[in-house]
Length: 234
Length: 383
Image (cartoon, rainbow over all chains, first blue to last red; front, top):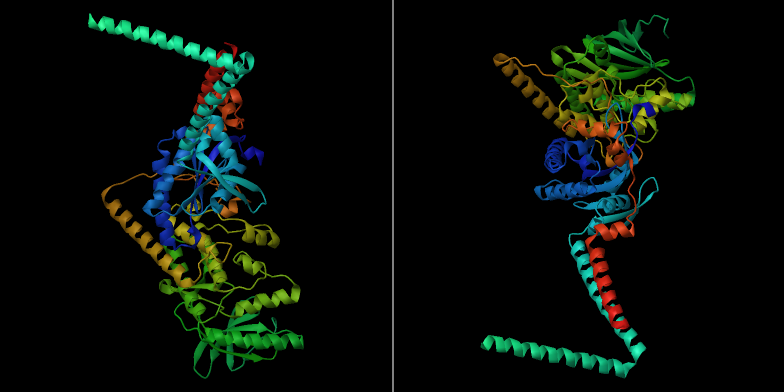
């Protein structure tokens, strides 16, 4: 068997599953498949041909994206826009080991988990495994913040998967959180400096020192303003 | 029974032997009352008195049901009865060849294969509407007549045969290649089982490759139950994507996602037939004007049939899409060495603090602001 496969690589797998595909009439299946092919053609166009492998599943398509988790996520989000055009999609994304088979196609746990996540996903949603989130963090630290927890599920092989979903507002919320933390840190550190000074010289002398410093600064300021006014008068 | 020359069975005068099977002999016979030549199918009854009683009851029940099926694509049963150790059925005598023999001679044109499957589906739809399930649809039970007409043989009695074998020996005799997974499992079957069998027959007509073939019966049973088929278009480029879908739907292991009735399948097959005919017409038209060389992809490699998402948990193989060229990326994956290969083979690393501070905007801002505030605080504290 090993002769038939190449060594495994780690890749992001985007599994685009057409909801209830097998139960639909064959004419509708053919239409949906053509629509899905068109969606994949459009969404993979932004990826370099050397970084994507398109695989066929009986109820969808799996796109294996090499060394570009952010590209894989973008692909999934763009494909999800096709739902508005009447293509009932659910998308599962995973990052894991895959192997090319010499005969045709690919195998690997990366594909299996993406497929089971897609199978679990409700219509018009994208669900993402923890390993994909880690891969995204590794490729672009901070970008994983756009993925928020969406619960856990246990697949038919009794493996539990921690899932995430993209949240367009999560990155902004995080930026605001960091800004608030920065402000808080400034306040705390300055207050600590003041407290340290007070404990060292005593409260009265600190207040006096501060007032003296304030008076000096005010006097200097007044002097500066006066000289400026003089200059203007001339 | 085999060696003894029979002159008459019931009121039928035996004219000759047409064939022999596991159940008994099929004779060419004459009905003197109607002056009609019939095919007289005999079935050897069990020696066991109790078993015989039960068999007798079921035989008459099934034969009665089959006798009600008068349809252009079903062999008509005229009469049935019992004589001595034999039960018999007088049926329409057909001049033609069965599909099994036809497939042994040469491959069928794709449109002909679809037409045969369509006619069988049409016949099955009629029978299923009347509550009769064939249970043994296979090439040997499909008769091809002159002018392309197709008839299904052995309606009703096929079930008795398989049950009989099962109860007497504990195993199902004969090839299970055309049986549905639920039939192999011994579960109750309904009309959807016939549609699986028809899907298997259609597959074989389209590809000439025996579906689920294996060295022995248990292995075939395993293949029927677990192995997904290679899409027929991989072996026969004339098979359209729609026809691939029809075969895939008929061959679903789970009956709930298979075709639910033969009418629906017949409708899809009719659409496929129309598509094939229009393609043929277009090709014929094109040939009048230009000559074109089309390079067909090699079909030597047997790619696995694309399984559904649910099935991939146990079977992770997915074939390459034929719509997209993935060769450049596959070359990267198959490369033996190099930095790119090493990069691809590397599992994601956890993001450490330094890398986080260097590349993540939020923590970087927090760190810079906190550092500045700490220096300012220290300056205040230390004067």
